[in-house]
Image (cartoon, rainbow, N blue to C red; front, side, top):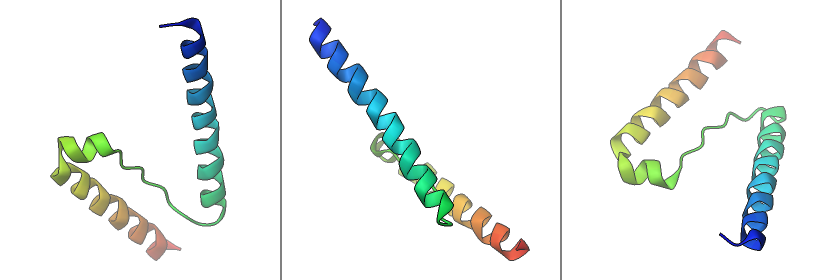
Length: 67
């Protein structure tokens, strides 16, 4: 890969990670719970993703009952 392209993608990925952390922090500070679902996971195994989302929601519901 050309040096310029490599530099571009390294900067882009670094900024994406920073932005994701900023977004996560914002929503967590405002009482949100975060569960990311990636497109490739859905394509690979939709049923697994649905099960994981249902489990995630159930966990949050149970946490809220304890409060």
